[in-house]
Image (tube, rainbow, N blue to C red; front, side):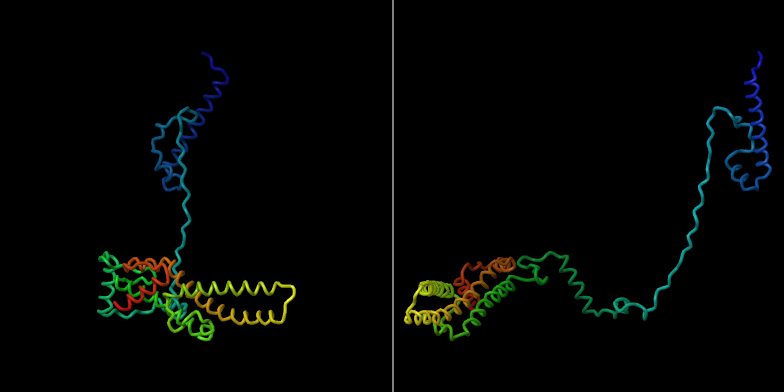
Length: 274
């Protein structure tokens, strides 16, 4: 069989590649101390005849070395002296005194009180964080109602306005008759305002009518002062009644929430005399 020029060229190139490969392997096997030889000798055995010649169709595995990471130099920072630290850090780093036996016992009891479930009739108050009993809430409700009565006492100090209004006895006024007195002042103000509006809207007024207007104005001013004071008491009570904290106190104390100032007066008398 005659060989074509192309086949002769292929065989010649194959032999040249195989000789070059064998010479390289021989060089690496005789020089194991070299850098390249030491790396490849660990991957390829000395017997290179077992490897297929170059140009064969077998897949060759190319192993690439991973580049080494640069070593990061560790730096150590020394802590600042105590005198150079800020004031808040100096207080934190200050040496604490050892706790006494009483303080240690108090902390242990506090931890037990937090983790241990509370007995019946005891609650952790949301506003103060303290443990309250039913009696504590009863006392707190009494204080809440007494503040409303204290507001009425402050309002009635203006005896001059109350003395000018004959419909209210300032000496015997209490929370029970505040609503009734306030309604009387409301009706009296309505009468005075309608009369003043009637006289002031007239196109022509006589001197007697002007004097009557001045008399009505002198009468309406103390009524306005008394009405304003009683309104403060009523507003304070109804604002206190709508607060969630106050309603919770009355519920835990087992007391009915008063709907009117009259009910608050009777409940306060009961709490003070029990």
